[in-house]
Amino acid sequence: MSLIAGTIVTLEVLREVSPYGYFLGAGGQEVMLHYTELVGSKPKPGAKVEVFIFFDTEDRLAATMKKPLLTLGEMALLEVADIHPRLGCFLEMGLGRQLLLPIGELPELTELRPQVGDKVYVIMEHDKQGRLRAKLAGEQELAPLAVAAPSSWMGTAVTARVYKPLQMGTFVLADAGVLGFGVIGMVHASERTRMLRLGEQFEARVSHVREDGRVNLSMSQRKEVGRDVDSAMLLEFLNSRPGGSMPYSDATPPDIIKQRFGISKSAFKRALGKLMKEGVITQKENWTYLARPEEQAAEAEQD
Image 1 (cartoon, rainbow, N blue to C red):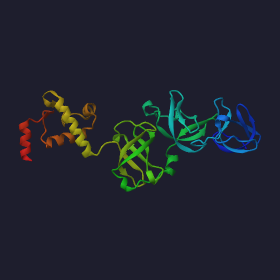
Image 2: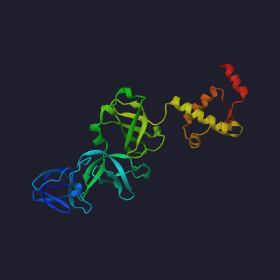
Image 3: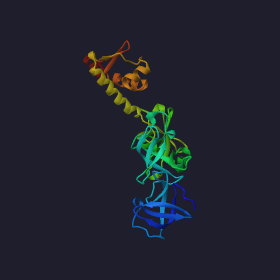
């Protein structure tokens, strides 16, 4: 038997070496099981123990009776425990030691990289030197485990986690609850209210259930809900302005609206339309004004 880091094997206890631990063996190979890596009662020479093989801090093969969250070739959702600006992310793997997710696996944009506490789907593999490391799980690994979303998901809120952040869209795995592993989905760039980082968990609304069971998600509110929120914001802004007026109207360019209010031109127009219909505002020469009391009264009489 050849001892391979990342695997779980059953080995024989050869001898105890105090104050360190036990030497285990198989096929002429020996490996140290340190006292700190014991689980349960102390084994006796000749006993068989099941252990996980890993590299210690001096790059020597070692054994532990503790159970890892994943083994070589397996996938798991691991939490980011620490971040090194040049090496990458260190992930908690359930042994009291961490697994490196190399910086080459992370997005180029720093703001898209995980933060401590985020969780990422990874697979355990060997690097060129045979040491253990993590690589990101992609659609090829996630798809066989994913489930199809039912049509009843349409319009509902779901919790999702990012597994691939891109500029054009963010690919996620939505929590499927009792249905199973999760549902693959995407948040298009136009449906994001902000950039989403790898491993981040967030809530979104299902805007479309595709025929293949995957989903499109939106971080924006429904138009009718968003309209009420946006109109209240514009009204508060107008009330804070001298004379209750602002140099913004239906004719204002979209980029200026986005920069000033943080909403799209279409959302801005929906909010203005609501306020105008209610007789709360008026527009003149590309300016918007709070309606005078007599104007509001006249509007109320017409309704």
